[in-house]
Amino acid sequence: AAYRLWVQKDPSNAYAQYRLGVALALREPEEALSHWMTAARLDEAYDPVVQTLRTGVDLALLQEDSSSRNLLLGRALAL
Image (cartoon, rainbow, N blue to C red):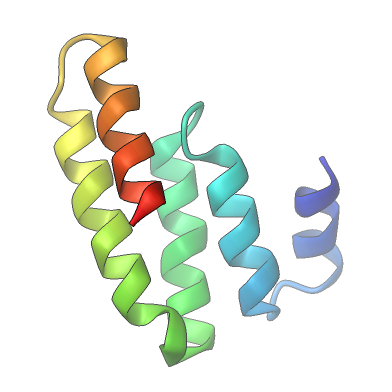
């Protein structure tokens, strides 16, 4: 909830967008990806990590079971 409020108050803050994405990654990976992409648009320093996370989310969403999906998301977040 704190990250959502931070993004609402300061939507141009790349770090806030990135952290909200991390907080949402396991429950709402598509929304997390949206926040990561916004962070990368706001600050190009986030682009390499966002591209890695995007690949991880894409691979995770191809999984049929939640355990495999969460495992791949966790691995992407750990990189």
